[in-house]
Structure formats: C-alpha cells, structure tokens
Image (cartoon, rainbow, N blue to C red; front, side, top):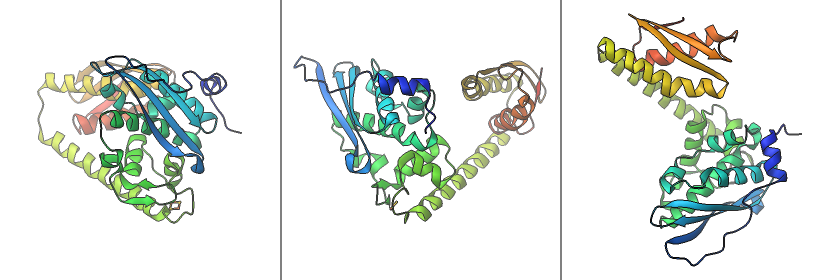
Length: 290
Ligand code: FES
C-alpha cells in the first residue's frame, strides 16, 4: 500500500481540470496538446493548453491521463500550477515542483511527476513548432530501449533531483525497469554525473579562493547564499535561518522554526551551511549559532 499525501488522494478522488479543451475559434487564442507515455507502458498523459498568443499566457490547462493514483494527481496538480503562467515561466517548472505541490510522492511514483513535466514541455514545444526530437533533452544516445529513454533525459533527471542510485533513476523515469540490460549504462551515467559534480565544485572552490573579496562584498555574498540557496531548503522543512553577524571568518547565524529546536542543528550548520558557504564564499569560513 502506497503512503500517499492527503493532497494526492484529494486530487485523485476529486481531480480538477480533467478532459480536453475544445478549440474556441477565437482570435489570439490557440489550443495545443502535448503527449507522453504510452498505455502499453502503463501510464500516458495528454496535456491540453489554451494559450493567449499575444502574451503567451496559459489561460486554461486540462489533462487526460491513463494511469495510477499518482499519475492522475500529478496531472491535475500540473494543470493548477501552470494556469496564468507564461510559456517561459511554465518551462521552468520541474517535476519537483509538481511533487512539492502534492506534499510529496512515494519515490517509486516520482515518474508520474516527471511525466507531467515532459508533457508540459511537449505541448509548449509543439506550440512553438519545435519537434520534440530536436530539442536537446531528447537528442541523444538511447540508454533504455524498453522504455525509449535517452541519455540526456536520464542525465537531466539525475541532476535535477540529485539522484544517486540506479533504483532511483528507475523510479523517476522507468529506465531499467524492464529487461534490465541497461542497468550498467545507467550506473555509468550516475558515476559520470557525480564526477562532473565534483570537478565543478572543485573548480568553483578554486575560483572562490583566487578571488579576494572586500569585507562588504563578503558579507553581501554570505547573505545572498543564505537567502537564495540555504533558506529555501530550510523553509521546506519548516525551519528558517537569519544572518546575525560576520566577524572575520566567523559567520553567526540564528536558526529558527523547526531548525531552532532541532537536535541536529549543529550537524546541519557544520555539514550543510558551512560547506555551502565555504564553497561559494571563502574556504576559511566557520559557521556558529548566535
Ligand atoms: S533496456 Fe532498459 S530495462 Fe530493458
């Protein structure tokens, strides 16, 4: 039995925006749909968009989905998320946004959120007259023949969701879930992405170390990293952080909300925030709680 959030169950039992969109035959309005998956593989989604052409705003979104509880809920959530967004804004929506809207999905069902993101892209690319096969994400070596999954698609889902195991990749895009002959290829890709991450982080650290900052630049950059890269993660867990003071290489912060009373706050400070600030601002920084 899957452990679904209340939101998933609600959108499964009471899906919103289900169905197709009839062409209104109005000036300045276009209707388009994007399709992913196949009924033979278990899940299929057709996402319909009504777009105001002059502004590229999505006025309406509806879905037709063949699939399980989380496929229906993910499709319904996606239509709610993208309404009134421009096409460019919609292209920034990730499968994580869909899963977050639903209060999370069981990991084995994350492929439903990925399917939503891909249907959205398919619809937008179709509207813009770009063949899906021509856009970067689908132009690459085929890794999983059973599910027709290319290397760029697997690489993208690994990077966007910080995946580290083959099992996770299978849960997110189904690759590897058939005959299994592509499992070694997925493992190689995971290693490759990990090596690229390490190389990038070493390069950033070296660049940071080679670029001296004035005291005010240092404080501003610390504040920026805390606001843009640390706070969103803590907020998602019901916590928060505030910069209290910077004295030399000592950064004083106060943890709030769930983080304030959290027994693992010291570990969080050392392992997460300090590592982040050292790689982005200066390798000599130390973080302490105010
Ligand atoms: S080729 Fe990937 S599971 Fe068969």
